[in-house]
Length: 111
Length: 114
Image 1 (cartoon, one colour):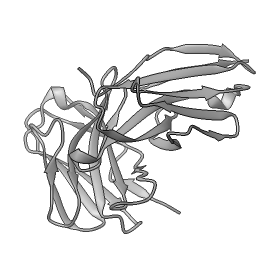
Image 2 (cartoon, rainbow over the protein chains, first blue to last red):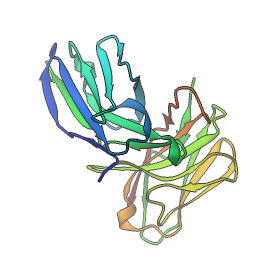
Image 3 (cartoon, each protein chain N blue to C red):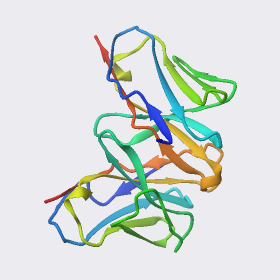
Image 4 (cartoon, rainbow over the protein chains, first blue to last red):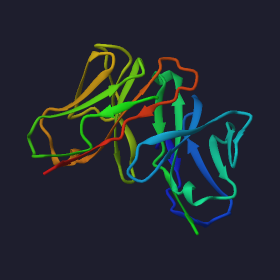
């Protein structure tokens, strides 16, 4: 079973729409969680960390559900510039802080 | 400004050649990583290093080796390149025990092995 699983999409949404991505992780020892964003032919960059209490950064909201072992990313009022691949990342401390990446969810925001 | 650089953006090599991929970071980070990224498989960790001269195998080390002689430089070596090593290679670095654990990535090297 993969360490981290994401729906690859693609998600094609109109500008202004709200879109949500989920990501599940298999190991309950996972302790840190992130969303990274990767633009086409570019490197991944940190979008936001995911905290147990949930956190918001502008139009982006990240949530963690430890009981069900999933994290989510909600994007409100989608912009054309949000088009990218969103990577879910999980860190397990007992593997020396190794990052485990999901395969990514592709989002295209359509005018 | 945080910076991770990789020696080449695009590289074409022949089967059996020895290939060196270089990565340099200017942030004084202890941790450095090499990943490969393939469609449908995501980023997979090849090797990582927590300090100079130290290296640890990731999930897919077979066919690769690494070298970390200086803190800022982490090299990935393909001793005898094969066609199944055609991929995008991404280097990353992070602070040891950094608060955010953020990894900073280089722009990637797209390697084609013919």
